[in-house]
Length: 128
Length: 471
Image 1 (cartoon, each protein chain N blue to C red):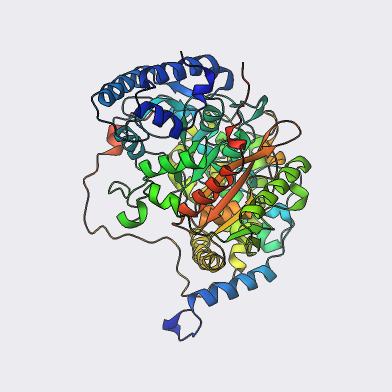
Image 2: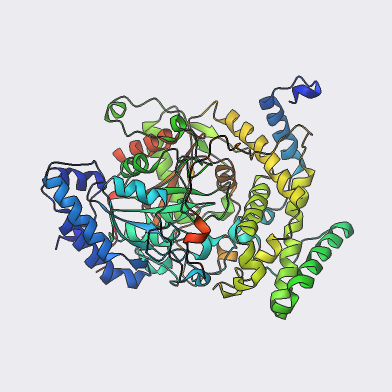
């Protein structure tokens, strides 16, 4: 895909191959594919995680507690802990996906070649 | 006051009468306002009505049209705008208590476009708080409370463009403007039995719209038909120097061309076999979708089966969305004011969003790049992919959404992660008389294909002409 690296695969060929690899590598329980409105919920059970993954979850949870713990009640803390755990399989599937160094992110900076005059948004709104 | 039937006419039908001076924009506006005042509160459809603005605009439109200055098909047509679109000196609450007092001193570009087209703003449509970006468990996750479905007021409209869906379905306005980051136009359109267009990312300026996900937010119309969506889309699409994410002029603009209508292209339709899982289908919805499939087969005999590629697309979409929401509302989260949101989930999920690593976010964006290429390959064989808009119909108001609507949605993830256009049209009713939606999805930039497919479907069906009895 990445011609600079000497590969002969076209971008599209690479994408197709990646999709196939991904399809074979990501046979996951259906509940792992949850839309944004429902992924971070509080079902009764947490996903099974490796010790390393669990450490990452605990670390994320502790980070949140250390910064914001004083404003959360016990039920909210428990829910956040669960959400941290639920997020982990999603992150791991993303990390497992076969990405080459040349696979750039689909978010491009548009250089500000010509500046259009914009009203001052922050100053002109009466935010609480 | 006009008869109820007049208030359910399409934009095209209203426009013909207004252009012929057979229908007064003032009378039309007054009639919609009266109906909105009467039924709006019962449905929790509006954040607020803009009566004064509406009547001023209606009188101005009427004068212009009588002077012979007819601007086009939206001139004198009343509409509602989702309450995350800035309207000068009118409250714009984003559906959320922490922003209840917010007033902007400028218009969103979409509002300006509709002003230029001569459309009349009846009010701001209710919405899920912050467009549901933090997730939510209940339909009541809104400053206005739960929006009730006009087809069955014990059911929800879906979100986050909840008011926009209810307003169109209940005949409180001729059309509404909504937004979608993931499902927020397609789902309310399906649940409310209206036609809704989620345009290609970057075709409609988001300047003056609340940002939820900078790389996934889209603005589009909810209306009575695919043809109405076509007309409204033509008015609001276009490059905007104030929104640097808009496509270049030649790629963003959309023209409603009567000539093109006479020579529609032969669309290659692909019926998606894996947009939803069998186990998630409500049997009554499945029956309706099966009938819609047969209708399409009659009018698109070349239609074949198609399948979405497998991959961590929903994971990537979730991570992109979560991180961008966390960034967009970082101040709200860090200040603790996020606790003022209504929904229990909305109060806390932002803390998790802030703690996703930048490397994971960037990996998700790199997966998006691969997905774009993969999907482009799928569209080498098809112009339009078709599937049920949702596997279920409108759900009860008190349902825990985290359980009741927690099914995989790979098409929604792919469509929104890649910025693909989608059109949801009504295609029948369940045994409980709730509407069911059918969605058409096309390659990025080919909004014309989904609109053509939807219009063809509506030429041979009349589901879009049904409306609820609210009296």
